[in-house]
Image (cartoon, rainbow, N blue to C red; front, side):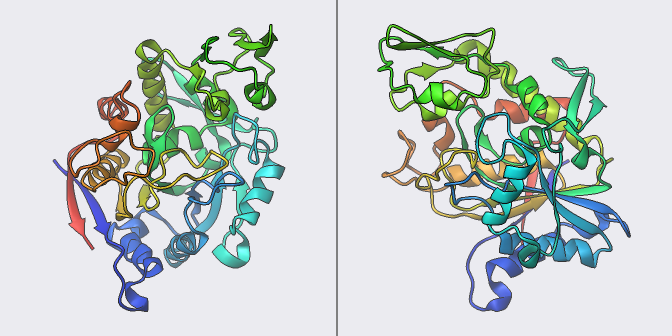
Length: 368
């Protein structure tokens, strides 16, 4: 049976048809109120954006979700988990400061902020899943112990997953830093012929795994935690992964963590994806690149797999921007994400998530 995915475009002719109003209409159309019981502590899971980036979901949109939860009898709080890599969200203090700097203040969103895995990412709830890679997973306790949850995701590209949407938000965002380490477990390699010894990777590595020898860098794989931050900062593209062996297990581990996060709520989770400013990289980057396609719209569903598949299809239906990170696939119908990451199949994550029972890739689009 097809899962329902609700869609609204971005056209507006009055206050009642502007984007904030459309967010609230999607909340109602998708039946999110029915997921929330009176006095529920309801997590609003989102990404506050890394300092320097600006493509994260606008706090004004988040306010509409908060109002919907309050109107449903719930007690909302905004939340995310600390990052594995160093940056402006590596611990709860920096994370909260970063969120407030980006506009996620109570006076704007009408909800408090709680970093789900605590001060130093040690607050976790072990969740049984019986997967291929994990028998149990480490979910941030501030998320796992909530009564219900609305997951808000900026749909965009991703350096390792191919794209990021609801499933990735559940998996990486729902996990503590140590849970993120469980999922990554990939070990990059340095191409010595391309390395110029700029030391950018040395400076950002959170565990000092980059060793300098003869003016070049190598990675100590025993020390490396697989956070991938060195891949992001290397301008020479001298650092890469073994895509043939590393990525499929990574996608599977991510899907299993997404299942673990969602399984704490007995179906009482709603998902909304913002297909706006579809940047080629994750909002974890400290910058936001030019989008790869025009803004598409906002979508909502109770099924994260169906929702992500619908967003993926809508992005690919657009004409790509030629002055963007796309390497090809500019015409409508061509796969934009495979163009940027030809070494991998981004949809494998959704197929495996479907196999796990997280959701269905078969969807019915309903325009609101």
